[in-house]
Image 1 (tube, protein in one colour):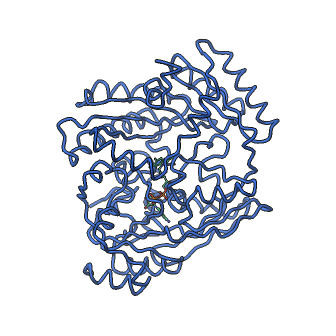
Image 2 (image 1 turned 30 degrees about the vertical axis):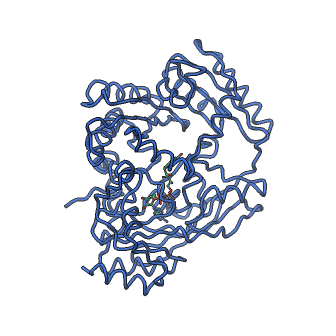
Image 3 (image 1 turned 90 degrees about the horizontal axis):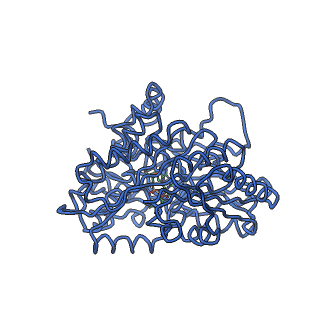
Length: 484
Ligand SMILES: Cc1cc2nc3c(=O)[nH]c(=O)nc-3n(C[C@H](O)[C@H](O)[C@H](O)COP(=O)(O)OP(=O)(O)OC[C@H]3O[C@@H](n4cnc5c(N)ncnc54)[C@H](O)[C@@H]3O)c2cc1C
């Protein structure tokens, strides 16, 4: 093993001294992500501190760093926007290298003829989206972290945005890519609308969470942007079951609203929905696109809701205003830190998916088990969730849990609350036949169930790791459970 100093010297020779950061506070902050946000608020950094953060300028520098790491078996943690929530950025191995692509931040081309936008991995999504909107176009991608996340991480985590029911997840948007593998190979997948030239190799790269390769450039599809036609509609409902049923009816009838969300009453409280729909679930849609499609979509959804009983309409302006303030920029992160420090109250989420046939059972079973079995249930200040991404065959469930850290040191919070709550939700989802991760990635805390999630297809997953990263230098402990 090379010494820490030798790693830093080699990185400086590859990327230039000014691109290699060794400041201790920066290194500490780069040893974690939001999974350990409570510890970070109190300045506790329990994981090994990386040897350096390197900020490459192009794919050739990424290639040289990876070749060096591969030759010396040094763990590399890819990073771009740093908004990861599942431990994907944690440096769990001594003297890791954090490969931070945020300076690769050029929009390479917006092509309104072929409807393509190409950007380097460090381009922030909001920046790219705004540049597209100036030309009357949109990527259609709008995760709540749009002001924070960057192209590399968005693709690496298989992210999804709030308009997914119309535009899909990032996997439906990526046309082509450039990625660098641990042996230094720079690979480019070209931009074509479709092809039948073997398996779709984009999917080796999309969702790899930095555990197989480093994404350096991304090309997304573009759509025309018609914000003037956006139409919201919302209803208060008695229960989640009828909400899931309406969502299913809308999707299977062939309507494609861009937003389709269903909140339970508990989750609704933290969004202020109790002010106009106390103790009720809230179902909302937005239709967007050309005017005629919007009108037909809105009318179709209203017809479907009218077939049910027990609903009450909600003024659409209220929901539109609420929705327009949903995103998280850096200022909200600062506010959140202050709040945790002051109140010792925090919250996390676990997002899963299921078919129409089992999603309600997943929702009920996970919440029931937490209420009945979780040892510190009295410390929970919120337990609920929402569905925010629907498909022809099912939907997701985004569980939300907040707790007061009673009699608990910040360093005990994970074991006492977050890990067991996450485990119950994952176990109940897998038991009912759903998927344990809908869009945040496996990271490092759902790896105990990676094999169960994939079953016999884990053979394919493991083979990818063995072939592309035989020395195991890419983001150790992410996606793939540590075997030894
Ligand atoms: C407030 C908030 C709201 C969020 N809302 C959403 C949401 O609506 N939808 C959603 O899908 N997610 C959401 N997330 C999760 C997160 O924003 C996404 O996972 C996002 O895609 C991460 O992008 P990033 O650039 O910040 O990646 P990072 O945090 O830098 O990295 C994320 C993962 O990708 C890997 N990675 C990063 N860059 C590269 C690269 N160039 N090549 C290979 N691997 C790489 C990292 O190793 C890590 O495992 C939210 C997070 C926060 C904090």
